[in-house]
Amino acid sequence: MAFDFLVPVSDKVLAFSEFLPPQSLGKNIFKHTEKKGLPVFANATVAIFGVLESRNAFEKKPEELDTSGVRIQLYRLMMGNWNSNIIDIGDVEPGDKVEDTYFVVKEIVAGLLEEKIIPIVIGATQDITFPTYRAFDKIKDMINMVSIDSRFDFGEDDELISSHSYMSRIITDKPNNLHNFSNIGYQSYFNAQEEIDLMDRLLFDAYRLGEIVSDISLAEPILRNAHLVSLDMRAIRASEMGASGNFSPNGFGGREICAISRYAGMSDKVTVFGIYEIENTSLSHQLTAQIIWYFIEGISFRITEVPTSNDEDFTRFTVPTDSEELIFFKSHITERWWVEVPSILPEHTKTNSIALLPCTQQDYLDACNQNIPERWLKAYKKGLN
Image 1: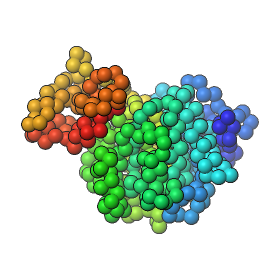
Image 2: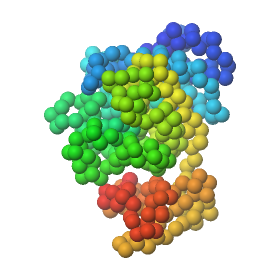
Image 3: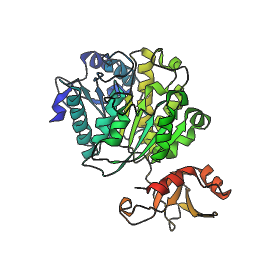
Image 4: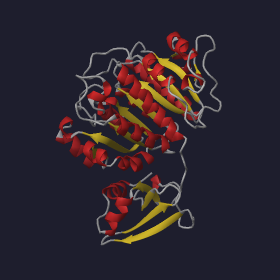
């Protein structure tokens, strides 16, 4: 069984947690230890585990991720007002081959998903996103993926899978379960024009760094529709990470990335959250810990909402345009917005109902001004799951 390959939380971290106050995460997380083995999965909401595999790093020299450093910074944080039960199941060490590591990660994530537990994956390199995606194979037919990254990571056609080319593998690998891919925070000078054109041809969504930074709430509807979220820490500017070389002077700030992480936690569809390309610096470990904290905080605010015309918790707006009649819904509880998208691929709408696409109030205002939102057009062309 794949869980047998997990190594326990280090003695250094366990010793550190002994001296923490009772309100700390370290005192409230159930841990995988040498003495007691794996924690009980029953009633767990979130499972944290590290992946030490780094042989497919693209730019940086492969080095072992210091997950103990991340854990020490996470454990010392205080619990929020949460109902979440958190377990830490340890680390996956590199296998004989990279493919062996991928297999173990895939099986662990699939096992947690079957138990209705949300995995938080702390990985050395972002190619680990690939096995977390493959973990959905027997669980969900089509998934939506969001990458928070300065690059699209398509790579060259003949390039071996790496932290800069894993998306090509996801797009081409069979079975193809990827329904939609969205990128948050790309920086144009890191992406070839051919990659930008490919995103457009595949009807994927891409949002530039400046666009998101100017209004961080734009990330919320993107993440609300995601099942898998992959965060490349290189999307964060170097000064926030205490690092240089592999990081850029431009990128998200600490508060911005924590807000995005909280939005990911609030999405009731997000079932896997991965954090990759973590540097072994004190600032990097602290920020990683805070990102995890905000994701768990977001989980505590999850509300499942399904807008309907007869539900008094929603207001329905009909917006006639020159080419289409758009139907918007606004929640009175969360003030979130949705727009109806008639699916042109009937098999994607298994309930035979109109699909609902998360959107913003600005999308509604744009439609009122006869500007059909781009996200609606792409969803309409593709058909929405």
